[in-house]
Length: 168
Image 1: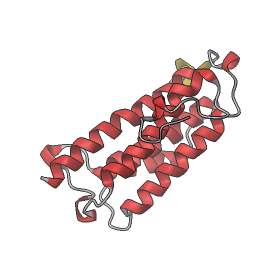
Image 2: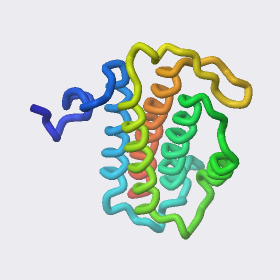
Image 3: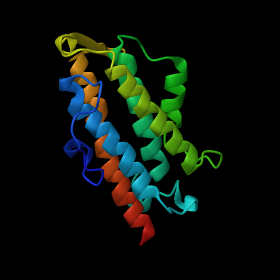
């Protein structure tokens, strides 16, 4: 039986996700959990503040969502759209119309989309080549998906530190 107090990687397999993608699924679920936990009762007036010249809470939430979106695109062997490039350019730009609630909803939706995508895959195909970016840099299917997951965790940690800095 899964312990809901434990980190996601200690809760057992995520149903429907191939075995080799379990660590990535756990990382995405942990990112989602931490984003909500760290921003609970966060003063929204500080959403775009950059303590010590570091990235804002708004940036981290936008960036996690954007990276997942972009890596899912590459996983499907597609190039980024103009909409995705516009989103990328807006990451971290202060915007009073973008609320914490909206950022969390967007992050949750993108994590859920990634997990649904994972369910369509199988372990046998995950070592297939996947080109990344305009230069078509070499990676694999699992490499692209794992990068999205580990990158989301990296920014989740930075989010925690930034929240702590802003709350002191």
